[in-house]
Image 1: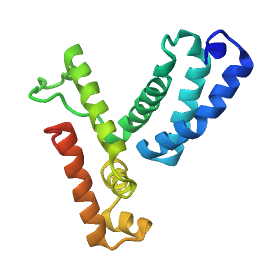
Image 2 (image 1 turned 45 degrees about the horizontal axis):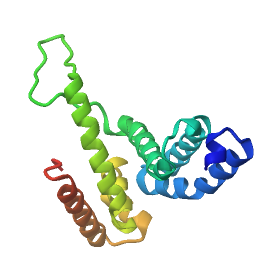
Image 3 (image 1 turned 120 degrees about the vertical axis):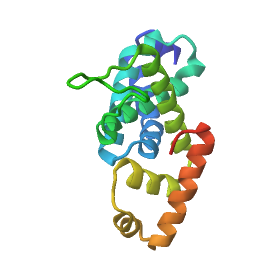
Length: 173
């Protein structure tokens, strides 16, 4: 790690290749699509390669990498979630509403808590939740894709939503 931080290209390459399977696995558990997961993992590894010298504590590497992956997955999911109006605001006719910096920061914090809660779900619940609520697939399509009955898919989705709601304390789902 210290050789990589000092700019040793071979040490950086070894660090990146060693981190790749873990980063990729985390991205697959969090991102909405396999393509987004691969892109998020690649982006995280590129950032690791470019900025390893800036990392102060060697023990912070894993949390730093996973934070990058989480942020990339969230960034890629935003278009799927669509633009959301600012709560409680009604723009005048012909005007757009803009979020304050505080609202933006609070929104990012909430998105981070939701992402962490989703990542902590068992894989079967996480897949159902992402396919239904993030990708917007029909229930029957999700059930068929996962080889489940509709009732089993609905049960897993209900448990996943409840777990995310409990983890985010009033997440509004």
